[in-house]
Image 1 (cartoon, protein in one colour):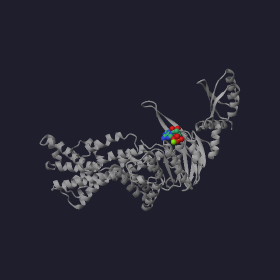
Image 2 (tube, rainbow over the protein chains, first blue to last red):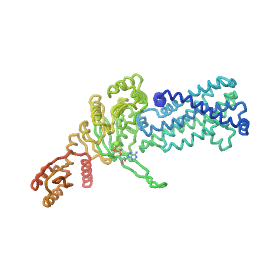
Image 3 (cartoon, helix red, strand yellow):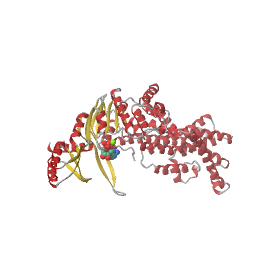
Image 4 (tube, rainbow over the protein chains, first blue to last red):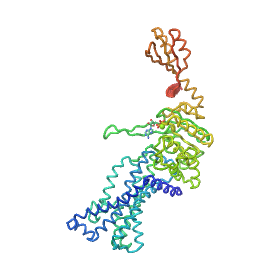
Length: 273
Length: 332
Ligand SMILES: Nc1ncnc2c1ncn2[C@@H]1O[C@H](COP(=O)(O)OP(=O)(O)O)[C@@H](O)[C@H]1O
Ligand SMILES: [Mg+2]
């Protein structure tokens, strides 16, 4: 079945890309939104400069690092943000009947989920490039300790976000009520994932809520690598937690895929829950 | 050869009877169906809405697992070898939503072809051939959203042939299509079996379509087979069990009425009468051919203005056949 994996990934990624980015306007908006997002985040802090709130954040982040903090938070967030939206779009394939056509084929189901997530990630990777160039232009004071750590930073964004993507895809695809997942995942991830507010500043319950999102640890690692020039030793715990979350998401996805197809074959119903 | 024996499928559905209460209902969609499909032949599955046609097709195409029964497709087992069977079967259903509208015909076919892991060069040749076959060559690189209904349907056929299946299941492929497009599609279907040697199962609730295309026909009702045979046999049985006459005549006296009703009772038939300009119009439905008797009886008493024997209707035939079947079961 493994030889189907690659061709399924490729087919789905190309299909998804072609059906979403059918006009050049899409590419333009891909560039505009993250920039607006970043400014929105930055100016949300701005009015508080010199205030108690600002002091509070500066205490965790460091006075001179607020913009960098927000920048790298936004970059990390961007890698994860697209998936809820794209999974929701993907789930229309169940309603319109094309999921059934996919089930007709001997394709690799996990490959389909992966291909779809990769196509969405393309959006983020594009923004990532734009942002990084921007970051390098504005900040000459990046503290990356080695090229190896740069690779670690990229991996800590790409792999967890793909795991998150396939999990979101399968969750949305096999659920009748996708609206609830918007509420459960989108805003809490933005709020508690530490993209805009420093994670250590949270009360304990919010820390627990934020801790389940891979974004929390990805953003943490990326900031430490780019802002503090840490070495591999200094982020062992974060990397371990992130790996555990990724494995968990991956296994959950496999389980959902298996269960939902078996359920569909038994009941004729494509929605598992 | 595809041989299915005793296929059964139940749906369990939850019914809401209020905010918190719900009850479980079992729908016996298919209650034991046997059928055989040979390569190069078109087999018809005829039945009214809800008869279990789609459910049967979904079982054969591995989308649904039968609750009971067995099916072998060229020696492979429908349940155990489902993934292998997916390579040699495909399904086409009516409904234009079932392709990607933003993609072109070629891109749609490339997508599904890759899901079957067809090697690149072979896939390209196959797509060219299929696009030619379904007559979409000029428009192959336009997004599907610009296609007409008939073109989308033809793309759907090409999609169903992308894995060069040995068996093709077509679920009411002409549903909702205009007459000329439906005619084209029937021509395609025929050449698929005759020229390309595919074994085809075609469902329909139009008897004419089945008569024109099929080598062998199964009629099912409420999940059970009530009849099988060649289209000729089926057509004559259908014609025999639904005789409908529309008669216009000058009068309908009390005497005629009582004789008429007595006669209809002996042949277990019904009638319906209404006054129509200067006379009466009668509709008679009968399970038997009573044309001669009707004319003889009526012409003794009145002047017949017009007499028409209506085309046989599948609905009536199926109702009759299932009545006969139930009768036989009770008295077996
Ligand atoms: N997914 C489903 N869940 C519950 N009942 C279903 C489902 N699909 C079909 N049915 C029921 O099963 C019966 C057979 O349906 P179907 O196979 O679609 O018939 P046909 O294609 O001949 O119209 C019908 O009574 C239908 O309402
Ligand atoms: Mg149907």
